[in-house]
Image (tube, rainbow, N blue to C red):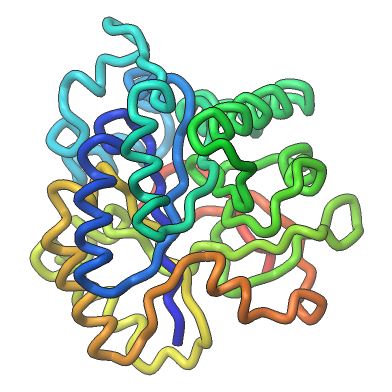
Length: 298
């Protein structure tokens, strides 16, 4: 079985510190992965607006946001100006690509996309995606092939734009198996490789799961699962920093189970796109994560 590793990079600190650490850990494990970068301003501090979202306080208390992100990052966009991540950390992004890892777009402004895309129109969405595209091309001097939405938040305009902007495949949603999204009743030409496994921060603090045993909970889900593939999302700010020892244990466990750790591109290359099921993208919930997410309809 293949497990595709999708790495969301949300902040300047995560890009500068978490990405190089993850590159080393992946190389040591002989693993492939896809890094998805935030390319515009780091406005992490503005996420305080989510304080009124159902389940947000519980998640923050379980995952120690200050410890993982740092005080300076949590002030960006409020008491401190938000630095442009692509301009300040392009070297670390290119180093990940030069080390042989796939790179793609996560977003332009992470907080703006996660908090507003489901409430904004096609014009707003197009501006955000085109800014991200321009940021990616400024860093890499190449067009991206893949997109993975910030916070698993999407709208119909974004799904349509992925076609128009030439993405080959995307991983914007949560689900159970690769599929082709339905857009206004027709099959999209951009397949979705949804996140299928829970993230570490969704598991830690629930049902007796801690940072010391969370890898065992995930390994239990992939042992003899019968699925040909899984997609696991990790974050440069978490698994690339404080939770890096946990990730190392997880890599060892997956390799011992006989799984191949690959990029989204490698996983997509094994699929017969024409044979994939067509599914609507709907709002849904995931245990351990606050709010609604873009999900593959059953």
